[in-house]
Image: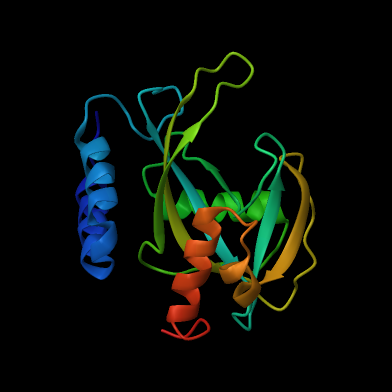
Length: 187
């Protein structure tokens, strides 16, 4: 297997663990997946594979765009399978564009969040682990989204509200808290 970019991603997982010491064990799991045989960037690898998603924020940094996920029935951040793309930033930005229809999106360097979650069996695809690598993507002036076939709906939600919404997905609340800790999107 071509390992180009793997060293950069391994370094990014290490940097994430240093930034978020309480999540060092999670970052280590991501590093272990990267080192395992088989291509972890392909969805066909049912022992676990990488996905890429984004914390898509408005220009002011006070709202996040969430998608009401068609398969899972949950309000989540836009994202999806890497489908062989080894640069997960590229995959995350592609997913953000496809799922939101927004133009002028910009992606930040560095991993914003890591989340390993179990995906239940669906339409004959066995249950498996997603290792989701999340990046911050910023919207431009145009916030008029288009709902894709992958979603029931999209909505801009106040990040401060998401951080305390007991009904929100745990990882969405965690990302909201991280975002607010950054100082409303600064730095």
